Amino acid sequence: MEFPLSKEIVSAEWLNGHINDPDLIVLNATIPKVGQVGDTLADDQIPNGVFFDLKNTFSDTSAPFPNTVPNEEQFQREARNIGINKNSFIVIYDELGMYSSPRAWYLFKAFGHDNVAVLDGGLPAWLQNGYATEKKKDIKDIKGNFEASYRPQYFIDLEALQKLDTNEGKVILDARSSARFKGEVPEPRKGLRSGTIPGSKNLPFTELMENGLLKPEKELNDIFENVSNKDGHLIMSCGSGITACILALGAFVSGRENISVYDGSWTEYGSLIKP
Image 1: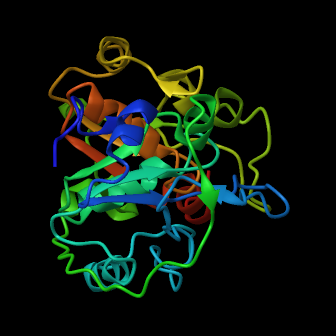
Image 2 (image 1 turned 180 degrees about the horizontal axis):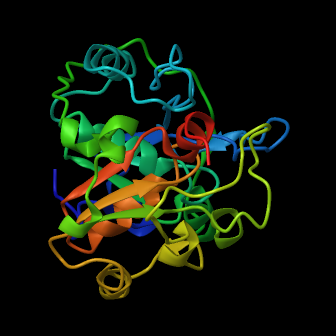
């Protein structure tokens, strides 16, 4: 199928024009924000949408910390179970705008599938344009032939993080709010201490967005140029590996490729490393 101008994000207008393309799969990767109480999922979805269960199916639920990246076998099996094929062009959205969808996008990239993009602005942008929705429904029992090929450089663990030499152009960017980064407000996870990874810089994920959409490529490039040279290795962190992927998305759109996500993020670091 025809690729959009930027293969990392697509507009609501683009998706509406391609919604019936045979190789297109639309995934809803919505999760509630941490600390949110009650069921926040919408009743309606973008036509032909399929639920991508980040929390339970596409995470290692046996791991001690939330949202841990699954292994290659699990990701391949579960992607096939929701009808993903090797030739699928995947567009991922979430109902909060752009919160958890970049995490799902990043997982597909990490498991070797580059034909994937995030819907810019998510469901709110789709609705704002007046495009059609449908009631959510169970997916057809069709197995895909997706093949996963894990790229280990896309993630970094605690041991590797502690060995980083920031004098070698490696920069740790923390996507949490300034207040959380500075410890001015408590962490939303009960019992988790406030603090920051030593040597990290704060780049709240909200600074990459404007009116619910990702900022234009030039503005994103200026943002990342301000924290690292073009060839620097960017390590993205946040609370539990979700909004770090918004930074990764923005960095990819701005032309960066030397990117890793610290999967455990502050939940792991703040739990295991004492101040």
